[in-house]
Image 1 (tube, one colour):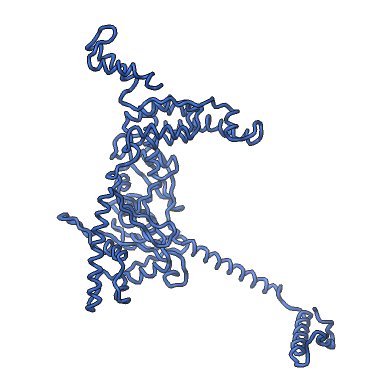
Image 2 (cartoon, rainbow, N blue to C red; image 1 turned 30 degrees about the vertical axis):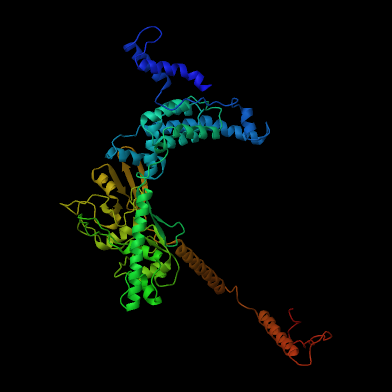
Length: 560
């Protein structure tokens, strides 16, 4: 049936494009005009226009039936309220927010204006900077490349969740291809079809553009990623992603190197010489070469990286391990942190400290984490201050930014330091310092970011251009959850001891003469019973038990 509908016009357009006469006898420019009109009408270069319609309209009654609920029940009314709320109120709020975000979009990818607008969006959305950047991009695509579908969202006919899925599906398409998708999807009966039909038809439509439109090519996916374990067990994963031939070749080279080192270890053990690549002296201790898996790891982590003729400067790199002093002394199992954000077990932290050639001692207030040191009269931050700043701000201090600045970051004066008159400008002290990533340090220096810290509260107020203002409290709580629990338990014990001592001073535990007499009588009866049952002639089912004791003068019957 589809070919019967489209074939005549398709052939007419092809004939006109070739200069063939059309029924009215005109050709040439007229033919070209007709061909252009036909191509625009049917969009011969785009995906087919599939009619997507529901079997019947979506009414309150059919919606309740889809939910498999009885009409006019409390559950059915609840479902209808949810449907109306999302169709009217939620859709209107979503459209208004996306229009506002789209107004902040800037085409200049590397410009400060785009970065500043992304910061403002993240602050307004109360989300991370990366999420703010993505929302700006999505809003721009929605308003610019998907206007017809976006309008149907505002009309309540295209659910917001469906539109979000549409946005994610077209990100890899060109602007022209997105508009083609927009025209076709907007023509669907979106107000009536079900969600499975929408997703199925959308996948078919996007798939028409080819595999590259659906996902990145293997070359585009090249990358190396470090992911710390979510279990906090002190492990991490290094992932290398790329085209299969390249990754397989890398694996084969690594395997060949591991086998060569294994042979060298075997020869060294036979000759009694030093064992190469012997992690932790395990091969020498056991008298056996390491496994290929262990050697692959050793080669990856212990071999210098080659960059050819490019000279790589000596990196200012170190691993920062923050260890609670009680864990360091073995008095607690509270975990340490690696680079300020990655938890590692206490045992691993003690091993790292034992192997470290040197480590920094940073003394701070136990409750607030504040560093107690005299302010410097120079611009340069002292080494001890820098160590403390790394503990306070392991990530960029700008709200929303998640870049780690333990090693790759810069210390910055909140109130600018006056180089000509140091006494007039901001001092070089912890209260006037924070750590920033290089991008946001440059933006602050350019005046695009303006922080101001309240000395009484420690809260920093950030002015992000003319877009937003937000407050951020300085980090400083270096107490782990385990240590906090131990400190709370110790505090509770202290309070209990205080209460008991107060009660004892008030005489609430003092014994009266009668109490002491009762205790003495209990002891006498207890000794009497134990002495009776320890005799060799006592026992048996007919033994009546020990006889009673004569009461003492002034003492009544035993209190049991």
